[in-house]
Image (cartoon, rainbow, N blue to C red; front, side, top):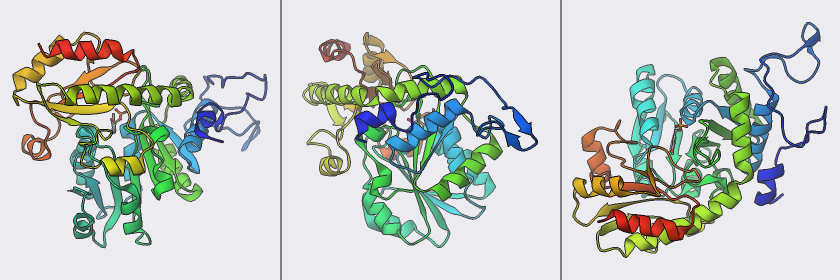
Length: 380
Ligand SMILES: *Cc1c(COP(=O)(O)O)cnc(C)c1O
């Protein structure tokens, strides 16, 4: 099946008992047995599996070309599950421009269980080689990164650590499986904040993992089952419903994203625009190779470099909403230094380039003819 078909039919069957075309929301915590250990169907207790969640998990595996999908209560619950594959003393190498919540989970929670995290700019293979040690067990990639839209060459990293017994996990939230398929490039695990593009309507929080092979999928499922951060049936239904229009939505996000990026790049008040679809993006060639489009996420800075100008701009927006999060049908604007990335220490933010004049946009699927004037007016 090709992608547009997979988002609608991948892993999906009509409900067998009634023929219901849509997967029902199975509001049950438990399933009847005829004799101890002999459940009537394939299910026993909903922490292990629930049919609505199962349908979503099968869909996730299908759209990310993996062997097994798992659905969690949030993106961070999904990342938490991956980290529990590791043992005290193990080391993780992660991209330096990381989602703030991921950084917090790594450094504020898992460091105290003796996992060691090092952060690295993956641009140069030598950087990775330098950080690699006997104890490295996991590489954590985000690409494009949040909020500076830096890219990591997934295939290059996967080839580099091949046969070294190191897992490569890719947070594919920004790109979505419509634009980028990390498992096809050699990754072992794909992670999503399904709160964003997969759900797509800013009405549900959810997380996803997709494992490349069944064995790894089983290990992750065991952790999910044992720790309990599962996605409930209502929320599973919402994400499944969102996935059905993922291809259409991301097409429009990408079209609008490029138009907005070009508008900003030519605006006299703008200093730099960070969008992988622009020729001025330092990794535009890699973006063209690794992604089939460039999505709706971008960020930019002001020529004045002034914090006040960024804040005024954000207050002036009318069609764009100033809010955390991204990837929904509606356009959102965000001020990383005080909002999404508030948990990253100030010196580190500045070292990364998360300055006080940086604004991040999640370009929605509205008519771009309404978005451009909204942005233009906000500069005044
Ligand atoms: C939002 C986000 C997360 C965290 O997901 P939640 O669903 O908010 O827990 C992780 N990675 C990226 C890139 C995100 O944007």
